[in-house]
Length: 474
Image (cartoon, rainbow, N blue to C red; front, side, top):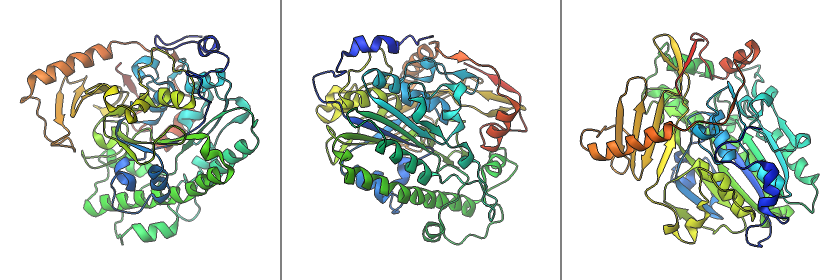
């Protein structure tokens, strides 16, 4: 098995973790990791959003800890989830796109070696497709994904239905009911519900979407790809409509999620289970002139939520220190009561609520692995990298050499490039970014996707069917 330079083979973990798998004699807690694809924190009430779109998530956050400032590893699903489940940057684990398979050890592998039952229910080709190996370490008889739900077409609207929360949660509860009760468990749930196509429940569309007379929607993903390719132009009412449909979609999902939280309380599992809610990336609504996600690393795409609740997690705590998606795996290991492997890119950020000074600040945080950038008729992947230090972000376009520097304290929307005003800081961040980019990942190359897979990815908006030729820059 190929192993990342920062990972430990699962076969060695039993020796590393010991028979009990505990780092300090503490009991092992169950773990549920919930990934809500394309969920922006600034659209959640617990992060300050004024519309009541997320009451169930907000209620969970009140009982736990909110990390206010979290950066993701990549602006699209596959590399981000590889980072979420390994504690490694894409540069380290090597998964930048559909041509690589994950070889680094995962959270599921570490917990399995410590005696956990591992279960996963996901709703994305980018996570569940077997050759990608993103679900390494999950028990095969409790591993499931719902491609057919992802592609189900509504006969009335012609839109693809992504609101699969109910079947995913139904299967999740069945797994929990059928588990071995004397063993701890790790359950990973991935939801595609707030991702385009937008198909919210009618009651929430009526509540959150103002009357709209535009002619360009339903705005299926395939139509938004045309917007991104400048084949369809949007005006302010169109953009407002998209944002409000996103609101309605979040409320639709939140309503489906609430009974699952009730189940955890009623079954007593809430007392012994750490629950984490996060996302892989955000979504653009013309903050920088486009829609969807995957191409850039501005805050609307790389800022994600992270909410923790459960044993060992203080209620009502808010952590302002910037952290990263790669911190999720080591933090959940610690909260599970299991030793954290050495050599991860991520940190155990649970230390923040006992001693905020225990986390390095400022800290260099990276985002990379963009894809589907069309330049001169060719599709380019991984041509942009971003590094953050404190309140500053430095963006690098590797094709043009252009650098952009922003101060999030005074310019949270990243619209005023101050590269000329802060040359020393820019040079420091650029030097660290170049060093970071020189690392080599451990993924296996699996070759180009099949014609069937390419058709699926085009339908889901992950490739541009009009620009099939791909050039990669790593």
